Image 1 (spheres, rainbow, N blue to C red):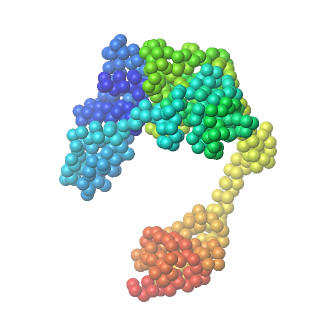
Image 2: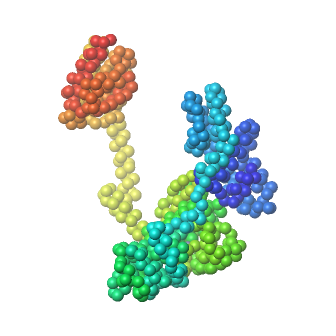
Image 3: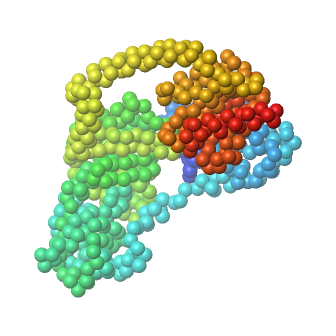
Amino acid sequence: TKTIALMLGDGIVPSNTGEGYLARLVIRRCLRRLHMLKAEVPLSELVLMQVKYWFYDYPSLARNREYIARIVELEEKRYRSTLTRVSSTVPRLKRKTLNIDELVELYDSHGIPPEIIKEELRKYGVEVIVPPNFYEIVASRHAKPSSLKDLEKTKLPKDVARWATQFPETRRLFHEDPYVRRFKAKVLGVHGRYVVLDKTAFYPEGGGQLGDSGYIIVDNIKYRVVDTQKTGNVIVHILEHEVNDEILLNKTVEGIIDWQKRYRRMRHHTATHIFLGALRKVLGEHVWQAGAEKTEHKARLDVTHYELPSKDTIDQIEKLANTVIDEARPVRILYLPRNEAEKLYGFTLFQGGVPLEPTLRVVEIPGWDAEACFGTHVRNTCEVGAIKIVNVEKIADGVIRFEYVAGPVTSEYASGLESKLDNIATKFGGSRQDIELRVSSWFEQFNTLRELVRKYRELWLKNELELLKNKFVRIDSLEVLYYAPPVEDQEVIRRLIQLLARDRPNAVVLVLTPLSKDQTLFEISLGREASRIINAKNIIKDLARIFGNKVKGGGKKDHAMGRAALSSVELRKALDSILRNMLKQN
Ligand SMILES: [Zn+2]
């Protein structure tokens, strides 16, 4: 219980991967022990006792007390619902010998610990061997790839990345001044579509922000740059087409970046720093960035959190983020030695993974958020304009995805919603202004009509039953009715044939609905006595024997349905002779 308190106090959210999985594992083992001891005390109570005992030494325990209690309760609830599933799952396994993979699968997908399976299966005389290092095996299968590796990822082909290492570090104009859109630089190298300059304002993909596009101009000829990537400290511009290296090599070129796209990304990127700060304030300190992407269209932030936030909580987050925009706080860039930065801001700096450099580039919104970040940001939070959350979803256990738009994209988003609303309004024959009124009046009408239809169905059913009474034909001991429904109303037809078969124990009701001249749907329903003499499923089998692939269907012995590539007349003939045959054999 001390381990659980400390892990959760550090902000770990139980999940199915990495450290989150370890937390879940420890909690489940603990619950298992309690269960074996037949202890009635809730685990959260025990963990909170640890919090009370240790909070002087570990202040994070006191700060996150509520979160710790909430998580333990949630996990305990989950575990209990698992135990109720055991009784339905385990008996199915009694004829099998379970190997380690199956045990892990049962644990992962159904949450059933192997000790319980072992115990339950012993009742059936089946022995299960659980390896002593079972949980070690499970944990190792859920290990997350280190985030250090992710930082090294580059989209450049291997040979290009290798070629690029010969060049000195590219001067980063986009860091010196993120507002530079035009610049002059010297071409150091050309390799097919790939160009290296001595300095550049083109931002290379990184930290969830996409690489810049734009143009490189030389001798009045424009070369389209479609993407920018980085390998080590060298920045590589990717052209749309291959270029003869003599045209560019050692020339002084002018670079122009697609500013609108880039500026929107800067605003979405800065919005993400503001947003993460708001999430940590509203949801709690356990919120950690699990993934991020900033494009010109929107920003996406995946964070660790144990449940989908409510509408109210989402509104609160959005409001808080917009307050920080309104406060016009500066966005400062600091270059600090690693140790100093960690001392100042703590490990929450490393939201995007732990960088390897001794000097960190820290992006700070004073009093709100500080992260080690490579990206481009605006100078002041007010430049973000506004933030609107457009989507919140749970993408994995313990991971919540937020998508939001900023700046002019919020207005585009609103326009998009308005035109959707207009489309709906047109369908309802009104305008955006009176849509609510119209929809509710449509609903009223709809409900009235539905009630009316229900009454008509009852009436029709009664009449039809009365009419069909005299349409049954005797074949031997059976009373057979061929019926072609006059309306396509599955629900009411189904009830009709149920009633027909219920009231006549010897009834054989054959519903044939022609779809076209050689396509017929059919349904067979047998009364209680009739189903002792003949079998509906076998009727379909007989049809299939005669017509092969043309007939498809199935069902039970008193009710079956299918589809035949036959006219209803042909099908009726065939059914008639099958019935007579069946009776003869009886
Ligand atoms: Zn950033």
